[in-house]
Structures are given as C-alpha cells and as structure tokens.
Image 1 (cartoon, rainbow, N blue to C red):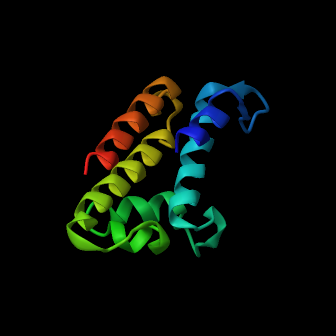
Image 2: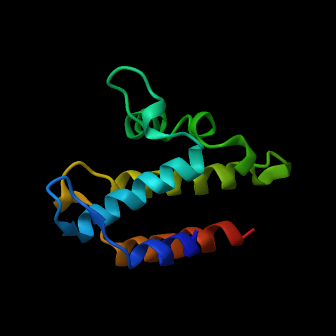
Amino acid sequence: MVYIVARHAGCFKYRLDGLVSAKSDVYSYGITLLETFTRRKPNEFEGNQSLKQWVNYSLPDAVMDVVDANLVTPMGNHLQKELDVMASIMKLALDCCAESPAGRTNMKDVVGMLQKIKIQLLAR
C-alpha cells in the first residue's frame, strides 16, 4: 500500500479541462485503490452504476462482497480484523474520489491514514 502512495503522491493527473491538479491526482489515486482491492474496472458496470457507487452501497456491511477474495484469508479469528482493514481502505478510497475536489482528502492525510491502517493490520 505505501509503495502505491509513494508512486502516486508525486505525479499529477490531468483534469478534464487539461489543467494539472493535486486534487485530480487524489481522485485518480482513490480510483486506483478501488480497482486494486476489488479487481474491478470502473467501466465494468452497466447503466448508471459506477465502481464508486458499487463500493459505497456495499459498505460497511458487505465488505466481503466487494473486496477481491484473494486478499482476505478467512482463517482463525483474524477474519473480522481483515474485513475491518479492507473497509478502512475502501472508505479511504471513497474519500479520495469525492465528487467535489474541495471534499477530497489531501495526499498528506492519505499517507497518515494508510500508516494507521498498516498499524491496525500488523497489530495481531
């Protein structure tokens, strides 16, 4: 996870109007997180539903329905902890790709949240 942050934190994505924006970069990072942890692409959905909507509607109760099953190991009593971590990652991703650029989390806060999630995961 941290590698992805480091890789994306320094590069800017382009907005629809062609201007470089750090808020657009955060949005792209959120979509990348969703794609990575769900193994789904934004264009795989029919009608008006998007990857963001699909994940948003599934949280927090149906995390297992959206997260790639290969990322969760349902062994022993750690399943709930793994699902909590995945839910935290999905929520972070959704915060990154809020519709309004002003409502998006900045990358500095994203890194801090990912570090907290990492600590949560490693504290077994």
